[in-house]
Image 1 (cartoon, rainbow, N blue to C red):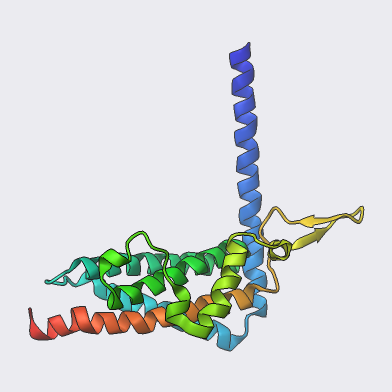
Image 2: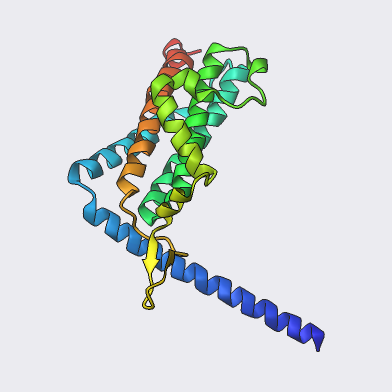
Amino acid sequence: MDSFDHKKNVDELLSSACHFQADSEKARQKARESYRKIEPVQHNNFRITLDGLIVRISKQLRYNINITTDKTSYQINLSASFVRTHYIINDMILNGDLIEAFTLIRKQLESLTRLHEIDKKPLQKLLKQTPKVINIFGKGGKILYPALSEIAHFATPRVGELLTINTFEDGRTGPSLYPAHNIDALACYDRHAYVSMYFVFWFIDFLKKNIWRCLQKRC
């Protein structure tokens, strides 16, 4: 009897989880539709161009680098992770998962900082150390990184505004459990694009030094 009740409870919990996921996916689809309705044409064109550019340059990693140091190997892995995360963030922004998107933008900023640090410092001095964002990005880092950290750590109540607040029939208000389009979505994308553009500049320079030059020499 106890075994039967346990199975019944497990089945009910699984059903609840599946229904929640299905409703969440419907909410994300609705959020994507809302985002695209308010996205300016120039904004959309830029988003497509940036995504395509990142794909094009990242495919250059399929070429072998004959002389690979610990530094370049580290940077290649970081770059591959950055590219994968870029498209995850895109989906999160369009789907209304803004807190999660901002948190991953923080990760991207730290990864980009580490890529620059590897260029400048001995690898052993960087291992297990948090990237020093402000040292690389200066004033821009001083503004952006604390804001991203506030969201990632849910450090203030105002972060909850990114969840979108619902008003119920009885007058009560509360955060949405499901993703929803939020007026801060475009601003979130702007910060995402800011970091990704800096990555593109770094990545092209990296490819010039480590892949394209090597191919020209047929090494």
